[in-house]
Length: 183
Image (tube, rainbow, N blue to C red; front, top):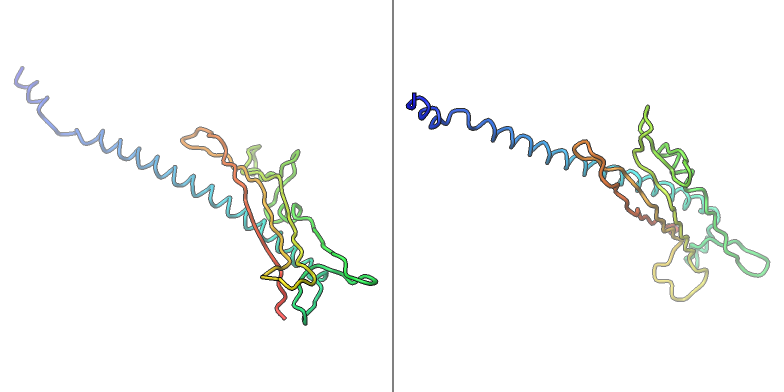
């Protein structure tokens, strides 16, 4: 009897199963973490691209306002007035363009993308800041100045890992677009 017990304790068959299960669980956790990271980056890239499309549309809408001083090489948004030129800029509705591109709905001060058939939020954006920099009309020192729009927007994406909701990712998405006449 003692021999059988001693033989059973010295037998190593089957000892690999717990290690295999532990390695598999660790690999699944690593894969889930990497997948969540990529999901967050894809959402941030999509919002950045939508913001860029909306800003470029606004720049293009300003095309008709841009003074075409071909001889002088100006590209600012100006209109001739009686004796001089006055600044003329069309700010457009960037939020509306982003909402149409991403399919967002407005809730309070946030523009929210919800998950279909649930009340969960996929992401939300707010605090759009648009800075339109008009190129100077006539200066001797122009060093690459052009009609330019810089924009930032806050993005919040809920983060979950292992079935638990973690603090959301909040980042500021920045973008810049400009207009320079080709001819």
